[in-house]
Amino acid sequence: MAVALLSTLLVLSGCAGGPGSGNASPSPRPAAVITVDGAATTLHNPATPIVVRAAGDPLSKVVVTSVGTGKAVTGAFGPNNTTWTSSSPLGFGARYTVEAQSVGQGFLPSTKTVTVTTIPSSKTAYANVVPAPDLVSSTGIGVGQPMVFQFTKPVVNKAAVQKQLVITTDPPQPGAWYWVDDQDVHYRAETYWQPGTRIHIEAHVFGLDLGNGIYGAENDEADYTVHDSWIAKADGSTETLTVYHDGAEVNSMPMSLGSPGHPSHEGPHVISAKQPSIVMDSCTYGVCQGDPGYYSETVYLDLRISNDGEFVHSAPWSVGQQGSSNVSHGCVNLSPANAQWMYDHFNIGDVVEVTNSGGPALPVWDTYGDWDVPWSTWQAGNATN
Image (tube, rainbow, N blue to C red; front, side, top):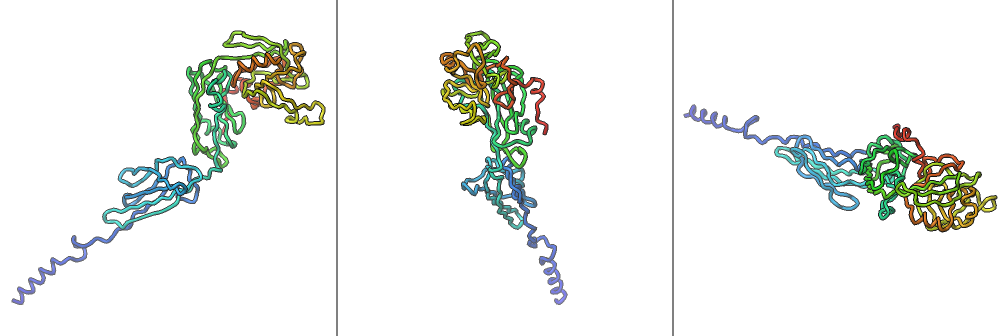
């Protein structure tokens, strides 16, 4: 009996769970490690999505919320739920709360809450299109109008930015970009645009590093249509302004260009604005009240052809000299009736070509001296960084 009892006890003890037994409760493994891209001490570029990652266990829940608006940021899990990537657009100067959780079978739960802060809006620049599309929506643009992106802050990384600028024309008319200065990049073809050309312009610069700690604030795009060709040829040797519409001469009128002391710039000029009247004040270029040659006068029917004060405009005071001598301060002086005709027919982007004025060539930066740059120079470009 004693032997039998001992045998029974040994059998029972052999069935009891012990270390290494398959019936033992497993020890919890370490919790998953959750990391959030963009949660470092550096500011996050909103062009880059927020990415949540889990190592050791899949993610079970991710909630990203804008601190400023309270709106949720949408996103999607990657394969096996090891990542989550935001898909909603992020903004500059914003803060986002990220709450992530990982709970897997056999793992301790893991949670992480962090804040992602984006680059402040003060470190951004806009790429504005010129002319503003709504300004020319009813008239279209003239054959001489360059395509322009005007940045609100200087651009250092010009070559990188230029790669993100896109132009399409219909019919095709190949052209090239040229940086007029640190904030203005222009595009033109070898010759004036063909009448009827449709032009689409895009800048893909959102979040792009423009240099010197500045980033592109947003993308921009615009559409333009080139209207029929209007070109006026102002010849200082004959004091005559001859007008061509789609290549055919339609008008000729006496005029007066800049005097020998104030010669008009030579070369193609492009109309950048038109106003029924403006006050012309010589103090804007340093000749102020009390100085010899000072003037301040309201002038009518003004077509601006450069940024330093050259206009085609009505000049009743010089009608006697129009057609015989150059007496203006650089403008194209016309009689009131002829100025009215020009004002009625010419618009933004139309061309006034000045020859034999005795003045220097219109500088490329002088809105718009683009056509005075030789095509070989323009085509080669000047974005070196």
